[in-house]
Structure formats: structure tokens, C-alpha cells
Length: 131
Image (cartoon, rainbow, N blue to C red; front, side, top):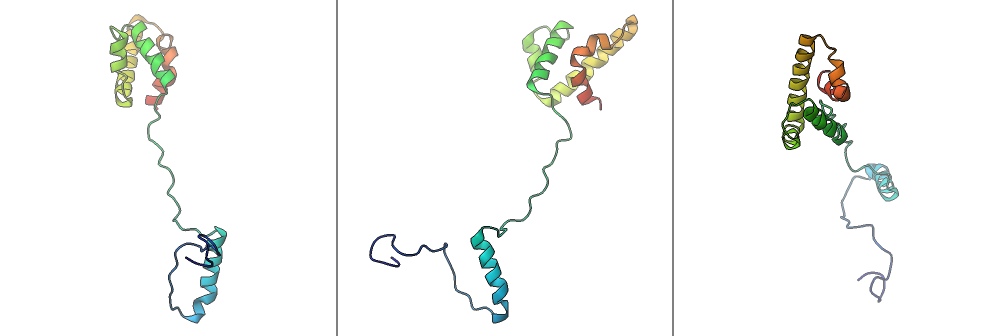
């Protein structure tokens, strides 16, 4: 108990402390550190590193749903379940997009058609993987 007879009476401390014997020459610098600590401007942690940016931008959920519909419409898959399976993670999505867009390109060129006519709805997704 400190500072009085009632529980919690008296001046509140600033946390746990420890007594040190230091050279007098260091007193101004130590007092400056104590002042900064009490003000809350004392930096106790090192500067954080910059956030690591992913090398690959991943498609959002709306783009994935469009890709799944595109796969069904152009008959690259037999069912929506199969479309969901081959777009389950970003590695499978990349493989699927690159494979299907290349097959579409080959098919369109063989028939003398414009490839963009088939890929316009997922062109933003293709651009993610072909940069």
C-alpha cells in the first residue's frame, strides 16, 4: 500500500521502476528520455519495414465468377462445378486463363475470326496474367 490508509489512495506511479547508479554527466540525456517517455513521444520500437507487395495481382471474386461463366459459355468445362474446381486458387486460375485464352486464340485464327470477340468479357483477367 502506498500514500495513505485507503486502498488506491496516493499518487499513482508510472509503472514498475528500477534504481541505477549512473554517471552524473548522463543526467540531462536521461531526463530528456524520461520526459519523452512520459509525454508518449518516446519511440520504443524500430521502424517497420515496408509492406511486401505481391508479385501477382489476383482477380477479385466478381472476376472469378465472370471467368467461370465464360468457361461454361465457351464450353471449356462441362459444368459449373468443374469451372469452380479449375478456378479454386490463383495458381489454377492462371493456368486456366492462359490455357483457355491460347486455345481461343488458336481457334479464332484458324477460322479467320477476331480473338477479341471471344475474350472481351474476360480481357481484364487475361491482362493480369499476360503482363
